[in-house]
Image (cartoon, rainbow, N blue to C red; front, side):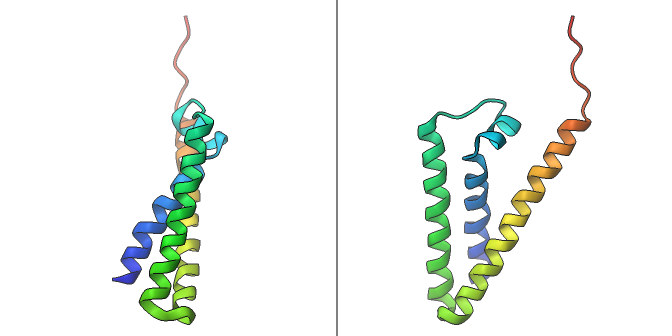
Length: 100
């Protein structure tokens, strides 16, 4: 149960951290977010990662909990990175609309 909970916390945390960067905002949203929204996304992502650490340590103790936390953060960061790359490639493969 701890693994599922960690995955459900870490994946959105890294998605928030990725979307807090202007480069990814332009790629995915086609516009930059206001600075206040960027700060909120960074704070939410950081708070979620801290929550994941607490959940991991509470569920499995310091030794195993830190190993689980490290594994889940690595996997989640890799999945978010892979999704950003895949979406970027998909967008690059689409033909641009014709301008008149």
